[in-house]
Amino acid sequence: ILGVLGQDYEVSDIQCSATTSSSDLLTAKIKRPIGFKGSPLFADDRAADPLTDINCQIRPDPSDPQEDNYVLRVTDFSRCGILKRN
Image 1: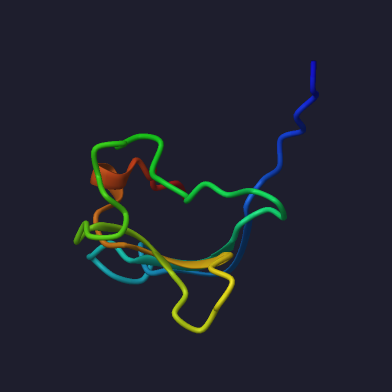
Image 2: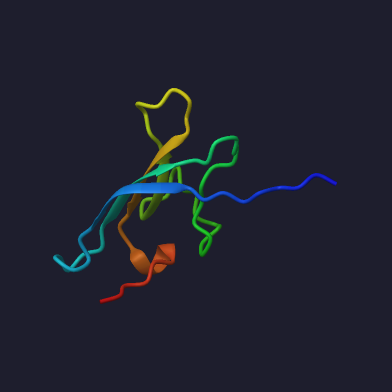
């Protein structure tokens, strides 16, 4: 039996306008763990295609030829499973 270690995505450059604007906007850069081949998705809305969805986007960073980096853009927190906190 092979053991599998879980790894987390690295998230950086987080920008959130929920506290400064009446509209939702969250952006961030996401880096896939080394050796991980899957693409990130929204766990609370697996029906949303993060490549094409207007409100819940996780798209490959066009400047990364290895395709290990992604750009997150959320414009509807409730639809994408994001909770607003103080």
